[in-house]
Amino acid sequence: MALQSGILIWLVGALVGSMLFFAFTVAPTVFRALPAEHAGSFLRAFFPNYYLWGLIVALITAALAMATSATVAVACLLVALLFVFARQSLMPRINLARDQESEGIAGATKRFKVLHLWSVLINGFQMLVLLAAAGLLLWS
Image (cartoon, rainbow, N blue to C red):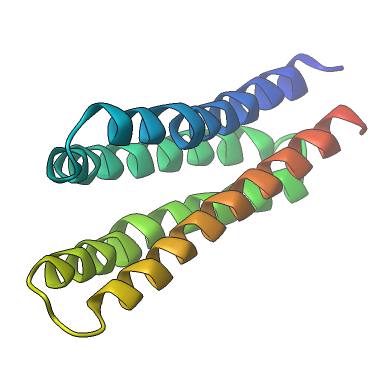
């Protein structure tokens, strides 16, 4: 395996690892350790940084992959675009739905659940794309 591919696999692994760590360690711990309103405040402050972290790592990986694999570069650009979408479009709508839910506005709970499900599905899709990219690097 070339050094470039090794670096790319490391970057992809770091990104997937941080995504998994958040999903399976940080989020559940926050909800167990803090009252719901504090957990929500923490996550509102955390998520913009989470998405920015993912965007930066995905863009660095895409830039480095251009010299090794166009497919991996495009996959990482797709992941980066999904981080932008989640941060700039989906997250504000999730927060609005949660605020409306706490105000008792009809339909807000359903909207929140649907939007949250979309964020989970996007996050899972991003991880699958990254794992496929790592597989391409490993077996090429």
